[in-house]
Image (cartoon, each protein chain N blue to C red):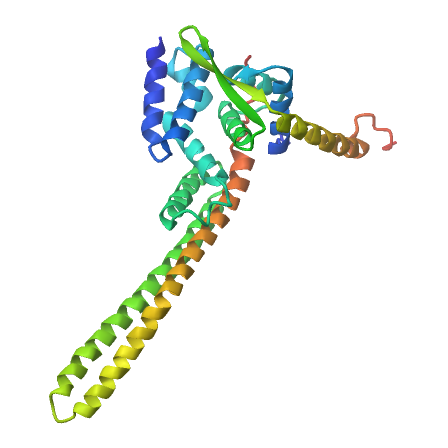
Length: 207
Length: 107
């Protein structure tokens, strides 16, 4: 009898691998207990109440990502911010909202991504160009126009030096942008999920 | 029902039930569902948030060879419940003045 429940919880556990261990155990324990107390014996009734493990896990992850402390947002690494954005996105997609809103969100994320890629490309080409200049200048040093060579050498070194000095700020700027995006997604997620998620339109009510 | 239930009221309902008695997840869900038309997966996030903010605590009690996790309201929780009750009082009074069932003012 509990085999059905064990299976369901096991599948849910697989889908929740993104959660911290303690949080995952908590939520699994809650739903295991819930199913046992409710005397659920059939997979179909479980899924009628809670949805498939996949659906339930998306809800849990979205809730976890929208409601983790906004105070700790700054402290968390950009990587985990990106993860949070992803979970919220999944949650929003699962919620019954209009396609336009989803398109809007994707457009917004695409713009952010494009911005980051452009920034990376600019920095990359800059280093490529200065490196190239450096090699040429060093070659010039050993020819008759060594004076021009040293001028170019100095120029390239100065340019590289300045950018290297600016780089930490650039990284900070990107981190900051990602954190802001995450906060924006969190707020959006909160609104969308609150509106569409936590209520059912079921008219029947069983005790 | 077309009116959506604000999280604030959901918090209030959960705290109100827990003020009467410590409850485990399933029983609490059943109680809240008698009042609000919410899905089964609604309660866990509410409990998680309330617990994180120290409005309630949990303890385990053995039941038929397994554990049941009971939720217990804290003093902070009782205080929050009082706040929500006050908020709801003034809110519902105001709404009643406009939408009240008596139709006093409409005729």
